[in-house]
Length: 290
Length: 276
Image (cartoon, rainbow over all chains, first blue to last red; front, side, top):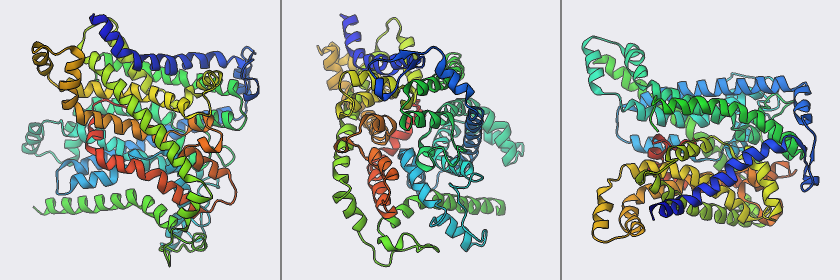
């Protein structure tokens, strides 16, 4: 009786999860050994490791890996630093804090793709308002092609990603900051500790578990977040903003080569699994709470 | 004392600057959407339209058929978010209240699935669904979104349910209430804020999903709003005031949901629903 009840209650969620999330992950592995395009959907041909060979032989592939690394490192570290600053600024309650948080945290609810499109207009090389402001403030003389100039494109997409991700970090860190026992601060005050001493000796060590888990999750998430880049540059110009996930999307949408895209997907999944194992084992060890 | 005041001034200035930085892009896209076409492409930029106009919105909903896309998005989002919420409460309930084999494993599976981005599984889903003739159909997209929604919804439901004491159901069951009865009549009313949060979360994620939708929905009358925006980019001759209007239409629903459920969403985020 209890068994039937448990199974009935779990079956909608878990049949969907197993059938539409986990099984496709395995199926993607199988497809990566096939030649499969939109045109032979129903009779794929096994081609062994050919798709992986294509990827590894691609002279651009090392560049794509490097771009992915640059994208993750800058995005996550800047999101963390500014998120922490924002959380510290918001720590002491003040009148209107709730409303303020609503106004600055709203980007969390917005589509990354739409945010990318939106910023591509703000950063437009001819008519963009960012260029206009920079010219007016005499920082530059002629407009910059933020998204069309190979020197600026990666920096631009990263900055937009930082804009988008600060609220998430701030929310997580603010919640953690509020869990730090007040007595610790009082003791530090008596000992005459300054702001930075307090931050590095008390606050950060105390919230370390949240910091570790949030950064780890964020790395996984940012690696798999082609949305903003797709809205802004689709990986261009000349591939300078192509990260792994963007490359996979381009192979799907432009080359319609599902086999090749799946091989890229397997590579992404392998990296993701490595991170997931670390994260989940930290969870198991009770490093931080579920 | 002086030091404290300097600190306060610094705080006010820093927070004000960040507020401008956070809100300006949205204000700008709105201003662009109410400019007449002639004032969009100027440099130096014209900051305020000389005469605000809705012509971009009119174009959007007539020639660009945005009404259809909006309706599709709305159906897909509300149905998948609704189903996800129901499934999530069911699964979350037994995961917190019953002890059984593999319970911990199932929870870990949910956390793992959280990390899977949609685009990673969309190709196999596309081949599976094309065999069932469910690509290019809203039903197919709804099914996919529900699978993602119910997984992270369950994690959220679990977090909310753990804060509800077991005694209230036990009391109801002593009074002769069955298990499903206790869930529906006793737990659900207490859980309403949590249910609102789960629904909002699913709503935001489904409304914003773009990559599966691009792959699945190719005929014009099936497109959702993000797919339409995607196709705008490739279409030559779409003016930026029209694009801006499209973006405003795409962004407003989730901003409303966020304004309505902000407190609960923040709670859900920090309690372990991981999609940021």
